[in-house]
Image (cartoon, rainbow, N blue to C red; front, top):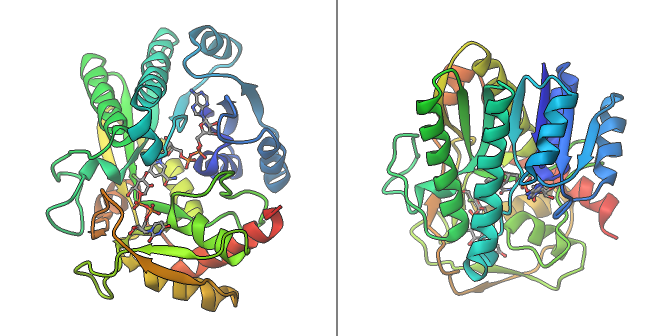
Length: 333
Ligand code: NAD
Ligand code: UFG
């Protein structure tokens, strides 16, 4: 199968391209490099010893998409491209609505035009808002607390309505929990240019002495040690989930949401301690007030993905800490 990967030079996209190539898929990437670098293409090729076709461009550019679909017989699409910073989405909601929604509708129009009927979409556990219980199953009520989350929820709805109107389509919506870690080669991973919003990139910048200390947002939640609990998942496990989803879509139609998580909750303080122990580095931190909009606890029931996709996260939190730091050591400059 030949797969178009939008946002394929980004964090999750690049790891998924590696798994696709390792599983004998052909890969075409479109990415506008708004949050990634073209050097990632060469890194993917080095890891896999295979070639990818790369288009630098925007998924909202319908003419470019038509050109790509004209030049290649595309069997399926994985749609990662989008903006993802929660805080920025509150400040600049239209930037998020424009990019995340328009890229999805443009892509669907062109897929329909070229009779390409299989799509895997990057959604997020953010669509569950503050869950009434844990672990979270796919049938929990959907609600969001910020514009970024709303774009994910609206895209899911667009995909659902579109699939209903076009029953020959098959759609897998993958709701990721908290992806961290990196490829074991140390060549690809996550290294935000600005001050990170997310926990693991922040821990790494502190460990690398690029930032003085971590702020732990709250120690008074009703959790094991008072700090927030999340379901951290290794990005390579997550990437493999996309391959399983594509294989599932081959023999089915319909709209299929799946949680991709480990099913285990880990607190902020537990993650910091594990990172220090596994990598033998110091991570100074201070406890500060809760971050507005954060939930206490959020972890997945991923039984549906196990049952229907034959997928299960395999890697441990220790693997995530080791691989993330291995990547960071190579890229700290
Ligand atoms: P990322 O920013 O590393 O990757 C996204 C890629 O899309 C980037 O390379 C960026 O340059 C590209 N892009 C953005 N808009 C584009 C456009 N209009 N046209 C072409 N390219 C465009 O992010 P990521 O962490 O790899 O996330 C991938 C997807 O997964 C996103 O849709 C994100 O919302 C979703 N997601 C991420 C997380 C997470 O914690 N990383 C959690 C849940 C869901
Ligand atoms: N945290 C800190 N200090 C920091 C950063 C985070 O203590 O500097 C804490 C948070 O309060 C939270 C935990 O670490 O308890 C994880 O926070 P992240 O920002 O890493 O991740 P979130 O769970 O808040 O959100 C992430 C993505 C969302 C996505 C969601 C899916 O940022 O886009 O996971 O569950 F929707």
